[in-house]
Image (cartoon, rainbow, N blue to C red; front, side, top):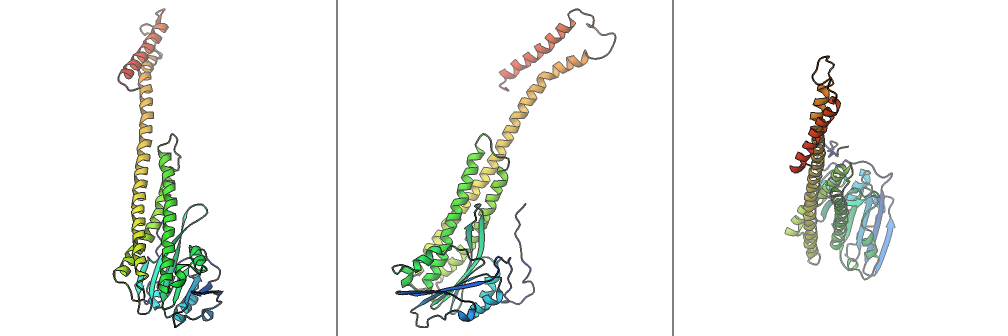
Length: 355
């Protein structure tokens, strides 16, 4: 089946800032989990409702990370966002699953939305619309499903010697975005390995009949990565160009490094896309060459049998009076003429290097 880009029309005609979930429900019920840490302590818990989420520490001693799984529960997303003073436009972007990655700066928060890419069991790329916003002492992350790429970050938060334990909310926000960007490299590496296998198969003796379909599927997977990387690189470039006051001087250099990683991923996407194009062109050329080879052999065989067929058809006519019909050696002469013409044409084709 062809891959189509779905465009949601659920928000048509609604006022700006009106939150409407535009995706498909992937979870039965939304879940809220939180982590609060400082240099010498870590607390973890779940919150049944937005009102049960701990409030951020106004002194800045603790950093609070709240994660929400399940964007289909728009009312819960709004309640969590309003509890932390998120702008209505940010809440709208959180549940707009079809939206492109953006980075916005508000008076008391920095909002980013991006595509978290993961690999399924069969190796296909899964995209999860993820939003990350932070303010003084707090970070919120919103995901469509519970599975994410933040496992290593959660373990680092549990390590008292980890850098994240000594930094503020801006560094935690960077670490979350960096985890997503680092996983892009794993996805690209998997797609690249798949393309290399296809390339070896193209130049092999017996490429699969579905090779073109598999190459097109790899191109589609690569397009998903491209839609995640290119806009995010542009948006983060705006932040590094005019760094918000909420991002400290300690964290700012890490953003430049993040932009460098995205630029590298973008170059890898271009390279892999060109490789797929060359692969498909080579596959078509090889198929054409093999078809021409078959047609050449068939043409030679047909050309050899044309004079034989002519002789046989002439002397196969049912006329009573025909020359040579009564000749005692007519049968042998006919075979000699047909075989002689065939052998003569074989020698001619061989000298012309057509065989």
